[in-house]
Length: 187
Image (cartoon, rainbow, N blue to C red; front, top):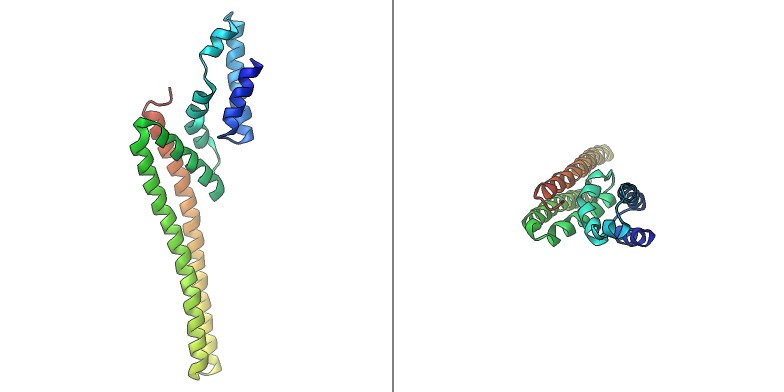
């Protein structure tokens, strides 16, 4: 049994975090021990379980249970979910749909960051042209203040949209994970 558990642990470590691996290992260790207590032979029990299949089948379950509280965690979960969806023949269309949705959200984030950068460059260009235009000190200070307020407002909007995107991506992982489970692959 120890050999089989080590093999399962090796397969799980390729996909999941350490805490997730230990939870899954203890779950299967319990199942095997219960079946042994009921009088089944160890060889018969282990023949029912394939470590690679278990690791693959647990993907949606584990990914949906994760906190996914940072972009890095969401990226890892999304990558694992896409790999799972694209390696299951019945779920390939769902995988492509998920990839398209991810591309839309990544494009949104990139465009928001680009608009902030463009605003900063435009603000600098306006400041330089104001200084060279011969405006008075008070007019320049007023334009600088208005420029910084606009930049601050855009930054707040970017932060708000960033948080909203994080929440939406978390929900997308759950939605697509549930859809994958519903398709009957998780048997």
